[in-house]
Length: 236
Image: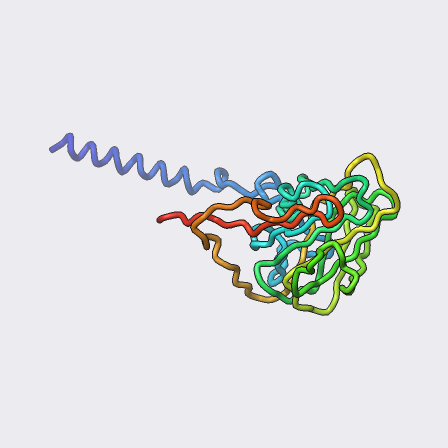
C-alpha cells in the first residue's frame, strides 16, 4: 500500500512539473518571419484583406486553358501563388497570350500580373464570357490596359475597374522586338470582392487526365489549348 501511494505521489509530482513547463511564458513559441506565409500578394492588394479573392489561382480551381507559345504543361506556374516559378513564352512571340478559366463565372474587378518587364512591354487584359473559337484572336474583345510598374524587378502590372462578370480572363502582352531569351511570366491574377465564394468540388470525376492530354495542339500560330483536368475519386 505504501508503494502504491508513493507511486501515485510521484506521478502527480511529474504531471505538475510538465504542466509548469508547458505553460511557461519563456517557452511559448511566437510566430516569426520564417514561419509566416510567403504567399504572393498582387499589386494593389492589402495583405490579409478579407472578401477579395484571386480566382485565377490553382487553389481556387482556376486553370490555364491557352498559351500562345511555350509548354502549356508548365503554365500552372503562372497561377501557383509563387513568384519564384515562371512560365516561359518563346522569345520570338511578340504577343504572348495566356487565358485563364475560372471555376465559374464571377464578377471581376481587378487583374494583375508579374512578368519580365524588359523594354516597353505593355499588358492588356480581357474579360470573356466564353473561350473564342480562335483563342489567340482577341480582336473583338475589349482590352483593359494595365498600369505597369517597371521600377520593380520583375515588373508588376494591375488594372482596376467596375466589376464585370467573366468566366475567362485573357492576358496579352505586346513586345517591341523578339529576343533570344524566352519571355517569362511569374504570376497572373483575377480578383473578385464577393464576400463568400463557393468553389466547385475538387473530386468530381472517376478518371485521371493530364493537362493537354486530349486538347488540340496549335503550336505555331494559335498556341496550345489545354484539356480540362480530371481528378480521381478518393475513397474515405
